[in-house]
Amino acid sequence: MTGTDSNTLLQRNRELFILNHIAETLNRTSDIQTALDDTLASVVELMGLQTGWIFLLDDAGKLYTAAYHELPPALDYPGSAWCGGCSCNRLFKSGELRTAVNIVQCSRLAEAEVEDDRRGLEFHASAPLHSEDRMLGILNVASPGWDVFTPDTLLLLSAVGAQLGTAIERARLSQQAVALAALEERNRIAREIHDTLAQGLAAIALHLEAAQALAETKPEAVQTKIAQALNLARTNLQEARRSVLDLRAAPLEGSTLPEALRMLAQQTIDESGVALDITIDEGIERLPPALETGLYRIAQEALANMRKYAQASRVVLRLERAEDQLRLTIEDDGVGFDLAQVTPTVESGFGIKGMSERAHLLGGQLELCSMPGTGTSVVAIVPVGRATAND
Image (tube, rainbow, N blue to C red; front, side, top):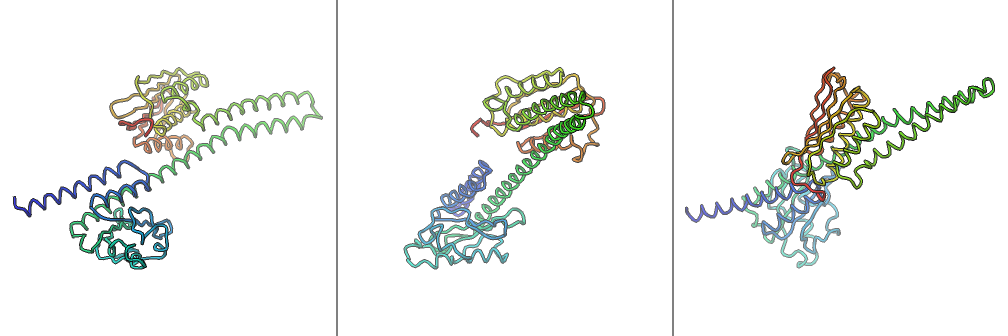
């Protein structure tokens, strides 16, 4: 092997190491700001550069400073140097910055009054951050001299820009999914309030209005109406307390998921009288809160649907762990239903959609099996890996 070949091999190995390191950095977090800060620091340090900063597009389509690392005094942030646009911003907005370039004379640095404040910097390399065809921002890195960024280095910066852009887009989509799940939860709560508390209060009002109307003509019937209204009030008070407990996921406060599921099973038995068999693998440790809450809510929704629609006499609830997965199963011997007939316009359809979205947000999937007359099976399979309660 010649010296040139050896140098080329070393260069390729170095580039692969940097890309792999950045990929691992991005995989450690779904938080956009953490990803930006950690990746920028890695790029500057691993490539032997002096400084770097990142611009991102905001919702209004304007570029803003999203991250920076080891800035020279001339670029202290926040500060006057960051007011207005600059050369790389104009290249980005005009669509000319499609790949990394190294001849961008930094107009922000050029305005520095003291030479030492620039620390020898005049030019910087700029790489677009993008996900497929969507442009998201700019990665800028700088070191003294304009010839530090070779064609191979620019290709590496372009690859880093694509990696970071994909991670940003993935994080944004994750945030949108969480927001959608929150919206579905609010809709579920609104439906439950309408179907229970609101209807109950309306019924109480009708009985009291009837009692008021009968007070003069049939006073003997008033007590019956008042008694009926009082009974409804007590029932709805219990329903209100149950709803509050559901919203707080109270059984999970200070309890592990297995303990909370056992309490949920007992509550189901008490409310419906159904025979419920619960089996939970031993040794399931304390899990991350999001995972525990998600699985608990799936079980809660599945059992609520069973009580409302299944007409079941027996229900099975299982929580099993197999290597790096958790498997939650709720099965009943009820009347079942035709999956093809369930749409988001049907109340139970929203419940199924909500369970599926929860499983998806946990990185898993929901399997639903049912046919008229054969009962229903709900299975949530989610990854757990080496997750701990501190994740």
